Length: 298
Image 1: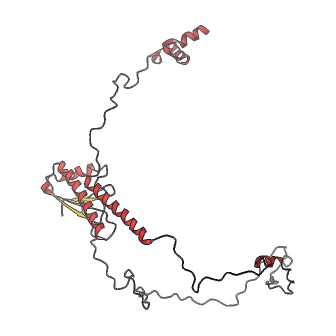
Image 2: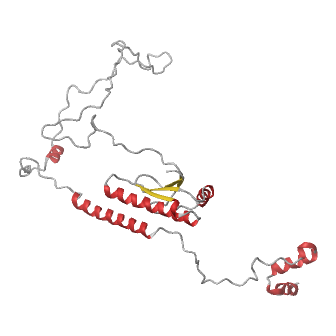
Image 3: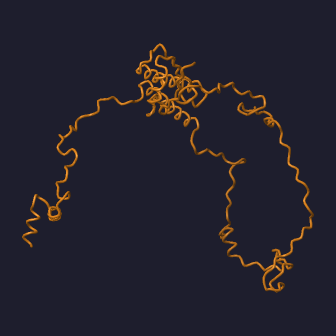
């Protein structure tokens, strides 16, 4: 028995368990006794590890990266100047009016108000306590026939309350406060304030999504672009890119229009790659909005 186990353990560089399984399979015969197929790719040549992808990755254009760098530098410099203008977070509290309060000096042998009160003899007990006495009209356990505490009877001596009159809501907001010698802030809403005439019309066309602060298209939009080309191979196409403006100042809107033009130009390049003539493309950049839209009508 020992010799057989040693012989089984030394076959084909297998351990005793694998050799025992093979021996049992051969005794049973059939499909279980056949040789198992090799692992996929066992006889394939080894790949070259040094190979790298040759296709250039789809990244943001240099113009968009330079624009984002300028905005970050401007925000950093603004933070520096804002911190310097605000000053220290710990305010310089001036002394109270009339100078500093004089320090109280204790006479010789005194320990202070707290210790003197602790060492003083106890006061005589007052004859009458100032605390309110408990209400004797509340029924006790003895007053209840079942031996339970009963609730007192609630009486309404004031009578029923009259109808409540709510204050009238004015049709217009109250006028701004007027203080002598103080000018009313410009941002205070008044009745005469006029709302700017913003263009709130929705832009028509097929929408395309871009990565934040970038002219790189998000993945999964190739089918929408190919559908536009299949429907109108020769155009025309009106492309409007939007720059996600977050403020009303001129610098922020200028950067947003530039980013919108970069996004529209990226879509124009893709349409030209699909065979659309460059003369059939109309590019426009807007400050307020998200992504870009492509339409066949202006």
